[in-house]
Image (cartoon, rainbow, N blue to C red; front, side, top):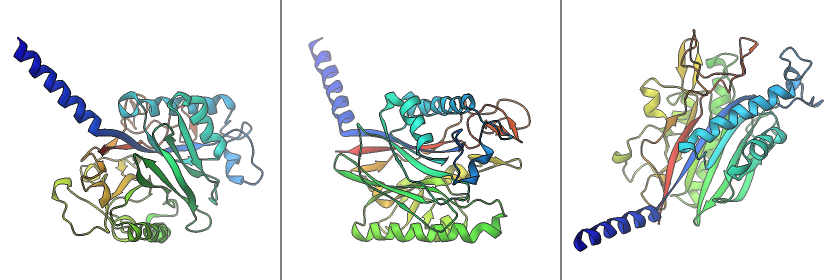
Length: 336
């Protein structure tokens, strides 16, 4: 009996040490689908579509319902604990994103990084992070070109390790995929230059690039310009440290996606990482942890669009849903 007790205590001690040596955190991205407030901004004609007197009848009640819906899905992430880092896009302004963080997610202790961009519709990207886990040591906006969304760049520190985070919302395909492709390639080249400057200073830097890229993982902008390649975690070699690695690629090749368009799923929302997060030192990616967050809350349950994201509006009609994109998430761990 005494021997059994010693064995049990030993096992518990080993388990406790293992848990202490491997701290996990969850990173997610979500296109929030037109998170506009209800106040007219005279400097932004793009918000005219989302006002109480507009065709959409975008009232304070609908705005609050939208925030409540978004918060429910965000809380459901990471096994019900919410993400530790969350990148978002399609937010009108700082007020909208802060209402989400400070009013509907207050207990999750998020701080917000946000800058106004030059987008023609007045929509921005933003970043939420748990301020009890991370310290933001630097942030800035990168303006790739006029009339499109800025890239948000922030450096978050955890356990003396820096994570370089980029939040993106690349130019849309509204004018046609091929016609608009040069604009996305341009943004990719500017982002790649910033990545190169970081890797030149520290070749094993921890870089996380997330966003709605409006391109697939094998399109030129991502694969050939940004150099975000497919990979197998257990088959990485010492070479190609300048490459980036697309955690979404496997799901994409298996037919999954985050945005439903003309009867097909498109993998527009992706999370891309640097080699430094795959070297089994310090911060590291949990292999194959990339997931598309689709549950009973944010998924259309019946009809023609069954299985697709449950949006706020559909074909001009208010549906009271969540977003027309599914969120995506990955897990990292910290090895002491």
